[in-house]
Amino acid sequence: MVSNIIAGVYSNPLRVIAFNTHEGWSRDVTEDIARTIRDLNQHGAALSAAARAFVERVTGQAQQLQFSLRCPGVPSPSALKLNHGMR
Image 1: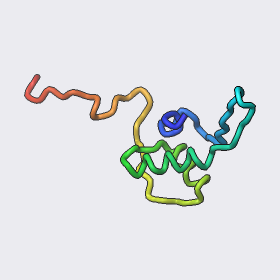
Image 2: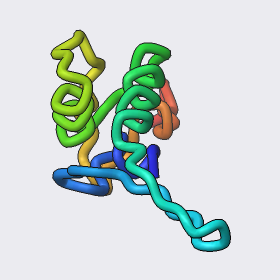
Image 3: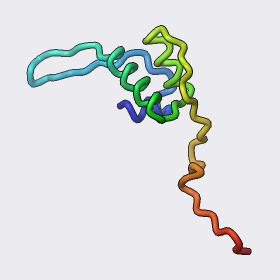
Image 4: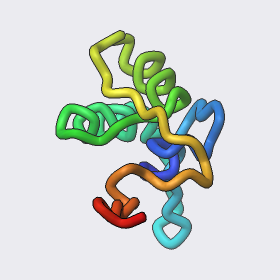
């Protein structure tokens, strides 16, 4: 769930609800997830625009969040192997 929000799989996440059907409970974990995403961002995880908006809306903090400019289907620079000197 967290990695999908970070990657922008969900275009406008509103709430995150945890369910435990075995014990018969559910609870809103939206703030917990937003804080986790914010913490991951502070440790280097780049956020999609949707993830950034989610964190800012839920936490009420417009922080300096690292923004991801990745495009779906385009490999990240670290995934590319460059052959220098090859023609």
